[in-house]
Image 1 (cartoon, rainbow, N blue to C red):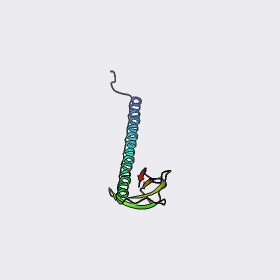
Image 2 (tube, rainbow, N blue to C red):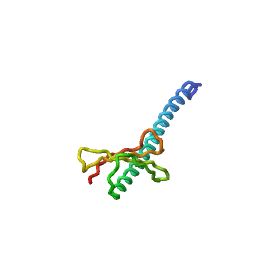
Image 3 (tube, rainbow, N blue to C red):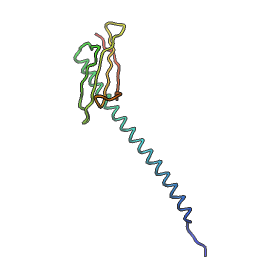
Image 4 (spheres, one colour):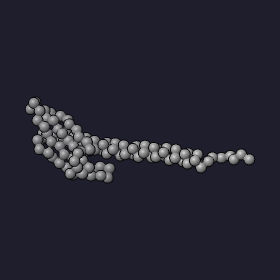
Length: 119
């Protein structure tokens, strides 16, 4: 009588192959979720920057050389922004640097933008 089926060794090798494949899928899914979170943070921070740039242009004030700070609520989160003017060689043109952070004392901003404002 011939035995039909798989040996214990063959079963263990098959389980190991499926386990390794499962780990690869889990790692890929985890990296995908992390990238989505990063993109969401970056997009929201960019919206905060754009909101503040529009506000700056609507007010029509010439930006000072010192940092101006503030905060904004967006998507259920508090965003901390700051901006300052940077002198250029043209007295009628000033660079405006703006940064947005998720925490007041965060080491690096989530988004930064430089634009130029004319008198």
